[in-house]
Amino acid sequence: MAAPRPWLTRALDRVERVGNALPDPITLFVILSLMVVAASWVATMLGLSAAHPSSGETITPVNLASAAGVRRMLAEGVRNFTAFPPLGLVIVVVIGIGVAERSGLVVAALRRLLAATPPALLTATLVFGGVMSSLAVDAGYVVLVPLGATMFYAAGRHPLAGLAAAAAGVSGGFSANLLITALDPLLSGLTTEAARLLNPEYTAQPTGNYYFLVASTFLITAVGTFVTTRIVEPRLGRYDGTPAGGSDDMLADITPVERRGLRRAGFVFLAGLALMAWMAIPDGAVLRNPEAAGEPVLVQLKPFFDSLVMMLMLVFLAVGLTYGAATGSIRSDRDAAKMSSESVGVLGSYIVLAFAAAQFIAWFNWSNLGLLLAINGAAALQAINLTGIPLVLAFIVVSGVINLFVGSASAKWAIMAPVFVPMLMLMGFSPELTQAAYRVGDSTTNIITPLMMYFPLFIAFAQKYQKDAGIGTIIAMMVPYSVALLIAWSLFFVIWILTGLPLGPGAPLTYPGG
Image 1 (cartoon, rainbow, N blue to C red):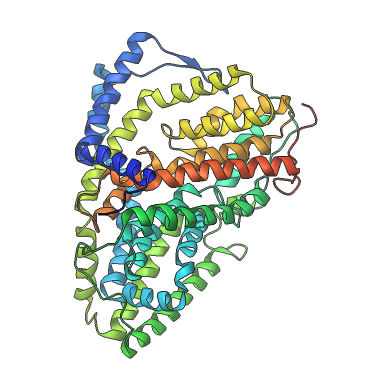
Image 2 (spheres, one colour):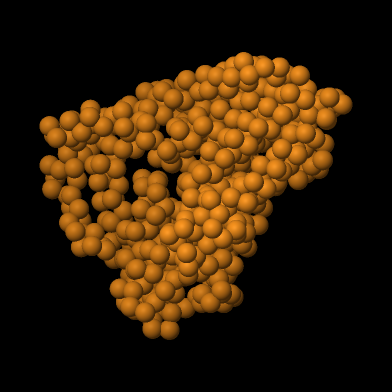
């Protein structure tokens, strides 16, 4: 008789069954879109409104069921789809990755990597890489998450566990990093504006959370590794399926021809990185903003970050062509064109899913329902009159809950900062501390909200290995990470506060005016 499954496994199995019992993800996004239209009509009939905490503007729901709403939904439907950020990013990267993958480069490189990486460190390496990928803005979503699944499959482990581990690092740890990312100056600018409502001379620096986020990088890596190996993998069990598109013998040793191809591709890869550095690092470089001289380095490098996806595609294309030419898997330009075309072709179901998801997210934003929820949620927390550590913890939880409905980190902070930064300053907490607390709550629920732009992409990646994977499959896998990160990261933050460590260079925990 088989041993009974642990209660947590049974609970997650139930979440997956319920989630997957819902209609196909494409149909579900259509239904959710119609529900947004209905909810916008109801909210308008009820006369709901809220005052924007920064501008004082009265925010009211937009009735999408009105004649103007219908016209906008129909007129801008195509634009919603073509402007959907993950769509172009995924297709562009796949053009290059398709050549690298179908030429045999990815398989050979993974064999080599797996041979050099101790099995015990594979999961931690993947989660850590996911956290660090925020340096490349959103590239980690389309590169590292599917790579995590492939690496686990290559190692004889369940590929969905690798997908989950990478997603936990990329999305759950989006705010943490060992280096300053593009998100830091964006949030610190909003924090400065909010702090100046109380102190016109206050400036929050982009490095204001740096020490805390560096330490958090290792915490997230440890938590993600623990959840993967102790909860997610045991629940998923052994993978006996075959990936869509066939199975390669990922565990076989590489041949001398493959080794030669890897060496040549490696030289091209290093040359590509050197070229990217030359185009970005020197003063006056091509990918620096000439109009931002004297501004922080990250501001000057905005053209570089904007160009990163295109450059990654070109690098993947170059190394794939080099490997294919060296091994004979690419003998003409027709071979390379066919590889790219076939890779983009398998995105058919994702493209349809992206169309439905793009409409849902756009309509939800147009309706102002998310904005009203964020403002009223912030007001409700303010009305509780908590103080000290309980207030900070409650703020983290509210940030996480609001993140389920408003995906953009900067959009939420633009709403919440004018309320909570001055409020916590009056209670003796520095603006940098409030910003750090927000980042903890915002990151930990990224991985379980269907409103996150890349959530449909996770489903598409999972379906390569499990055809019936749906929203329930992804949420059941990611809930343990979300809960574990929320608890561990919040406790870590409390300990940081109690020990009195600075959050960053010149960024204290307390505000003397409180």
